Structure formats: structure tokens, C-alpha cells
Length: 77
Image 1 (cartoon, one colour):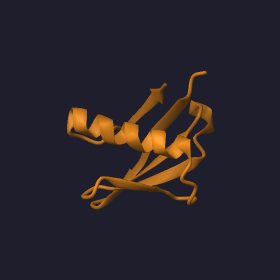
Image 2: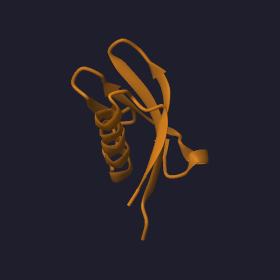
Image 3: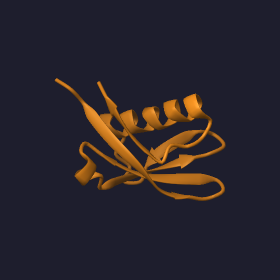
């Protein structure tokens, strides 16, 4: 069974970036905040579930690849 997560940048400040994320492009109702310097994230709703971890890891992976924070993306496994 495939697992999908989509994400999209909502805002960027000097020290943090907020992303929306979810299991479908039309269902990205959750948000996470990425601390830029530490490259760590937290779910804004406090729910550290698989969908959050998948989105956070993909965002960090794309940053490592491109050396810039992604505007949007998805992860499938």
C-alpha cells in the first residue's frame, strides 16, 4: 500500500518556515514549522504522527539536495 504526503510553503521568516501538509493536495489542513538554523520541525497541532514525519523528512531531504527550502513537493513510499 502506498503512502503519500504533500506539502506547500505557507510563509518564510528569518528563523522559521511554515508548511501546510496532508495526504492529498486538496487536504493539506495541517501545518508544521521548520526552524531554519537547526533544520528541525514540529507539528503545529502537536501530533507527531507518520504523515508529519514523512513531510518533515522530505522537506529536509529536498533542502539538502538543492540548498534551498522547497516551495512545494510530495513524498511517496
